[in-house]
Length: 631
View 1 (tube, helix red, strand yellow):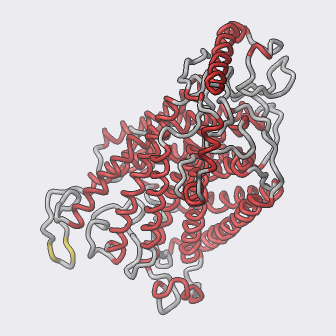
View 2 (cartoon, one colour):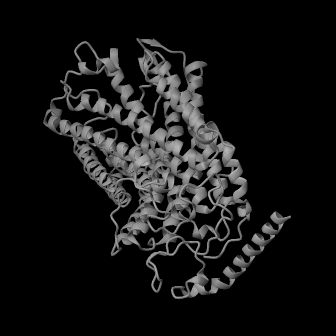
């Protein structure tokens, strides 16, 4: 772990930021802010809002699926004409609910809400930077996301209903306005909203990558970065390379919808009449969408895994097992995520030889994922475990990653996928391995860094209740779906009552729907805990979890600039927990190796000389700055 010679951007003084902070109005401090910490909180609160909307939509369609004979007349004041005369959900609106639930949860909650929150909040704090490389671009990234959300929210209230072609919006259903009500204005608004969302993600990704590369404090080499920063950095790389492809897919879809082109359309008949479109291919759209769609799985999963690494190491009071192996596995996931997209297309008529290649690559990606799971379990093994709420959510993530990952082996096999494709088995798989695991990573991050965000502690007892209800509820919702899927139940169907073979699973569907309602209700415990603790929670100490990373060296309520005076230098990696010979069970990154001779390892002793040179250089800079100030 060599000491890096990093740019000395940290010579900015407290006075500069102190003056800047006092010049901020309410608008510039809380709304159009350029402070990365406030922008992270904006992403978080907006993500929580969208999680409630997305969760509520899922409850509406689970009512239809679990209780198809239930009279939903009581929802008419809310849904109006989308409740039929017989008291059922309108079939077109059911498809819109499924579409908007998937869109909101994948993009607005697990992409923007998770990565936007913690990449913004933690990157400068954990690498030792005053702020992001560009505060203005950072602000723009949030407001593009906000504008995207406003447009998507408006689409929920238009007369013909929101987009209803599934969250993947496959053509020709999404390309022809006359195909169904949700293919009209609702689909147009969906596409416009996604364009703004993609712009938001690209602005954020450029900022994250630039900040990590250029603004690390003295001594913060890449080999000393916390695994959270590695995860955020690689997530930004994936997003920067894959989101433009989704933009191109959406742009071509707009051309087909509005300008008479035929990128995705050919040989279409509506009401017995042939449309003039020829030469297009709907499979082209699938290639473009899934080239983003599968990396998107890791765009939402990698930040959650990074957060889990930090939380598990801190609360096991042990160094993370296999630090370098964890980084290599994340690099492997990053590369492989771009070459497995066509396993979503095994039933699209793909050449079987090509399918076998994608099957091989898909199964190979299980290797770095298994490395991460092994390292988590080994870190937990014989650790001095502290079961904080964040720790329990992190362990819950590992559980989902294992159980959901195992079912991915079935779906990665092209022969088995022919039977299981587009059944509830797929729904169960990706909700466990991507949706629920990433959501648990988000929750772990909120509970762990809440004291740094707001200077107060969340209630641990309420947190435990929230965890257990959610953890058990998620398995109660998605585990039975595997059996329903193996039985052949197709996803996205409005009703199964016309199929006699489905009668035996009626009770199981009712069970899943009841579990979903209880799990959704449990999230209001978190909501109360979050907002109550923000103002009335117990005041936090500077380092409540006794962590080693840099963010805990800032004041309780850090201003815009994070550190008063000089940014601290870094002398060691972030996982010196329970080090043999050490006086305490944690040694922060800012503690020089020369201050801990009793616990230094042989290779660390060799770094002490280099470390002394850094300290002398820091003192020279400080003296020069004070001399300049005196003049």
